[in-house]
Length: 251
Image 1 (cartoon, one colour):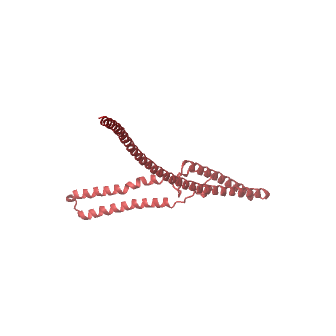
Image 2 (cartoon, helix red, strand yellow; image 1 turned 180 degrees about the horizontal axis):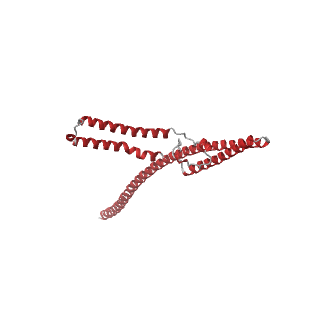
Image 3 (cartoon, rainbow, N blue to C red; image 1 turned 135 degrees about the horizontal axis):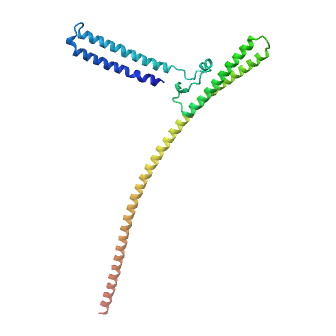
């Protein structure tokens, strides 16, 4: 893995810088005891060594990264063809343009890789049988049968490779659809939040108007009671005036 290779290299330039600084401090401290070279020349030598070593480590780091970035994005089928007896390697070290592989994608691609590995073994076995029949001088019919089988196996190998390519394109399409769905869900959530805020605002306005309506009802009730009281007083005054007018007429 690239991270395992670079984990130790990343620390080495900083360690080189630290050791170089420590060495220069020691040279400054031991300057009175050093007589074969001047202190400035020794400091230049230490700094030069420090720069060379740090540059070597940085060059190695950049080389590993460049090598990793220049890897082919598809599994190496030819390697399996030339080494069919080796166990099928996992797809952990391969690099794809669309990022990390999920567990299901890894399982599907590993299944296709194992099928290709099995077909490669069959092709090599048939090639060995074909070569044996070609060395023999008897009968051309077995050679024709083996050639037909070899062509069929080659066609199956190409079909599986095409299926792997189609599977990768479908995975990319599914990821793009999932990303679009996520954007749509986020938009719906934002709209829902806006509606919730508007609903809360309308509820606050409704509560305020309800409070005002209750106050107006109390005021109207008070005015109605006042009107009733005034009407009673007016009736009483009218009765008193009528009685007073009758008494005046009798006199």
